Length: 248
Image 1 (tube, rainbow, N blue to C red):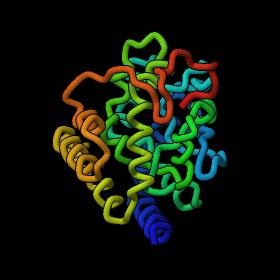
Image 2 (image 1 turned 45 degrees about the vertical axis):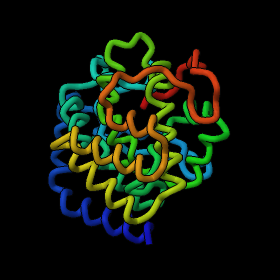
Image 3 (image 1 turned 120 degrees about the vertical axis):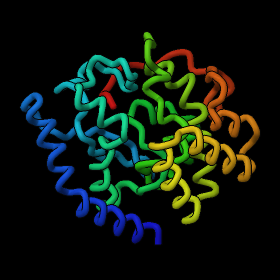
């Protein structure tokens, strides 16, 4: 049922918004005369890699910098790219990945191979399901770029501040996933574009109802600064990012 709904919804949105998507692609191309799409390698269900499609929001060949995590003040982001990222429009081409069966509308966000290689045994449970365009963590950390702004090492800070909670939220989803929860996540994702506070409060309440722990629910509310914390299944905070690879 989830696969049928994913495919139907993805096709419908692509058809309805195709004129706007074509205009966006054209605007990106006109800006620097380079391709409007970026295809990044990601790790999907059962550890299989695939090419995730996005509107290109960075300068051509930005991936060569070797930085995987992106802050709001990243100089590689283009003027058009900033607007696309703000409203998550750059993610819309991933509906093609949904049609191909590589992704779902809702599911843990897929990571680059280097980040996925750092998963603990507990985190690898996230790979039991298809990755998604949005999930609980996408709502909670929609401001990921601002969290990492000013960081000297965005990749390391991502793994210290964001990954521990993002992975825990993904594991909660994998354990408790349902069509009803998927519909709520889609609704809260849309709500977050207009009222981030209300969306965060709804996610925090949902996480609390699912018995995921008071600490995780508090993190979802985002009323306090994030602090470094070990990822699921580990007893130490990540101290080093192994190397540089293809950018997100």
